Length: 361
Image 1 (cartoon, rainbow, N blue to C red):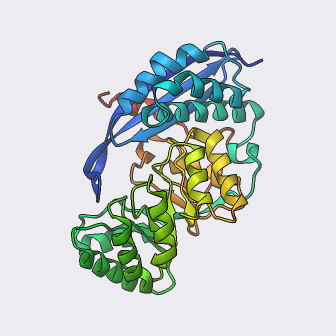
Image 2: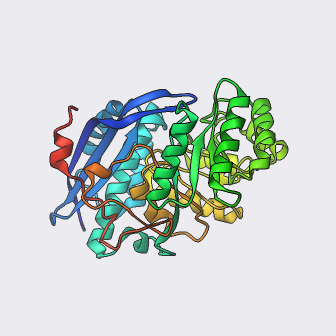
C-alpha cells in the first residue's frame, strides 16, 4: 500500500496586486496561503492548498501539530477513511474554520497524489464530464469608483471572460442599484451578470434589494444574508424574485443539506478549501444534483475546475480575486469564455516554490 511518509505544511502571507473590497471584510491587501505536500514511500507527491483572508496561521498549526502526526504511516489510497479519521480526531476542537481549511488542503493533496499514481488528470479520475467549464470573473470591487469598475470589466472581457460578477452592499441601496444598472447597460442585455452582497443584509433588506435588481436580469444574487439564517434564505428565494447563490461560508455537508432541502438556494456554492476538500465538494455537488440544482464554486479556481469538469450539474466556475497565477508555473487557460481543466496527471498545479519562499511567512 502507498504509505504516507511525510506531511510537509507551508504558510505564507501573500500581498495582493491591488486592494480589494467588499461589504463585510472591508479592504484587503493580502491573504494567507496554506500549502501541504504529502509524499508516499514510493516518492510520489501530492500538493494541496487553502486560502483565507486571515487566520491561516491557525490552520497551519493544525496541519503541523494535529494532522501530520496522525497521518504519517497511513494508507494514502484510503482517502475516505483518512478524511473521517481526521474529522473525528479534531471534532471536539471545532469542525469549521481552521480545522476545515487544514483538512481541505490535506484532502486535496491526497487526491492529487492518487490521480498522479493513476496517471490521470483529477477531473477524469473523479468520473469525467467535460473539461471546458464556464468561467466568470469575480470582482472584489465594492469601493471601486464606477468608471474604474467598468474599466476592470473591460479588462476582464479582454482576458476572455464571458460572465462577470460585481459586489453590492454599499451603505445606500440606491447606489447599488445605480451601479448594477450601469453595468447592465455596459455589458448589454444578454450578458451573464451576477452580484454578490457578502452576507451584509437582513432578509427584509435582501428581499427589497432582490426586487430592485430583478429588472437587470441577474444570473444570481450571491450571499444576500448570513449563511446560518436558513429561514431567511428561504424567504429571499420565495419573495425576492431573483435566483440565490450561497454556501461559500458553509463548512460541512450537513449545513449544505439543511440549506438545500429547505429550499434556500438556487446555486449551491461550496469552497473546496473550506468544505472539506475534494471528498466533501463532490458529495455537495451530487446532493445538489439530486435536488435538481446546478452547482457553482467559490475560490481556488485552479483546483475547482477539476470538480466542476467532473459533474454534469456544474454551472459557473469563479475566477477568484486571490489569484495565484504569478506563483503557478502553468496557470488555468481560458478558451471562448471557458476554463479548461488541464490534462496533466493530478490537479496539474505546480507552484513556483522559489517565488513563494521569497514571501515572509
